[in-house]
Length: 180
Image (cartoon, rainbow, N blue to C red):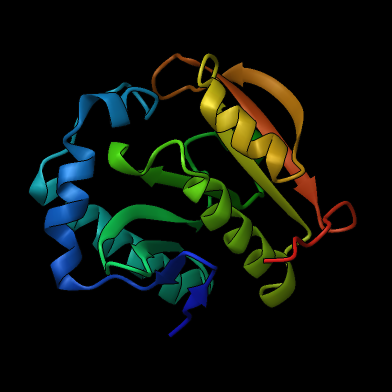
């Protein structure tokens, strides 16, 4: 079982007690605004998502981590690595992504968590390239991608929903580990 720690966070595999707090994150329209078509997700959809993320850990050796606040034990959301099957033109690729509840926005937690996931991907899983994909207009996510050292590689359309997206990328030879 892979567990990563940062100064403020624990990135770990999923537990049954994570379903309800993650479902609350997924039920917030503002959180979901930039995710696919913007639809919120209910408890069963969240449970199914967590099951799929755990299966990806088993099949790929990486996946999405539950992000826990070290000082309180509260589930903040997720970060981690996944295969972006929804955008075939970038494959083969591994994407770093994140989703945190609104109460955790604006504190640098997404950047801290994503940086740990990128470091894990390059240093522990030997990935040669990591991408991150966001809808055009999601400036907050683009700022995180830039802080991770990523650069804009292309702009395209997500075939699943027709929304314009930007693909950022970072190769292992461009990667500079942070001090965390």
